[in-house]
Length: 220
Image (tube, rainbow, N blue to C red; front, side):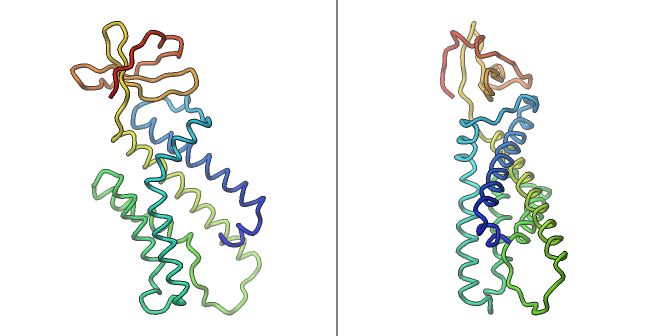
């Protein structure tokens, strides 16, 4: 499926663009959900895309590289012997890497294993069937796999954005004797939390960019 898609450059670019914006948007949804930032304020801009891609490399790079090495080795050995389990090894890689960034609970372990299974379904599995299947079956199969891929991307990046927000540190600002942690900026909208006794309060404080004039950056 992936090889046929890449042969059509225009379609590949279109699908790649959709996946890029989809992954960034759902990363932001996960991030904002964790910090109680209203989802209606999410804006996808060039800086947002650049930052999210940079953050997501820690998740995407090990999965992509390790899975590619495993599948290339399996193909070179015609998926014989232990190499017959190459797609399953990729399933485990996805599960372990995703679970590493999540809170280590049994529920999250099951979720990462389930998403690893969806990743397994996207891999180019060796074809053993010799009979030609009906034309409509190919379209149906492609639709199902595309739907699973879209669900996989959305869910994975929501989880990763949520986990990233839980583990990140924020720049703090002083204004009128109060300290604020800057959570997120969308255009002219800045979302902060007041820091009291070294801890962030649960309430979100909204600032327009103009209201931040005179604020002093104090670091993390």
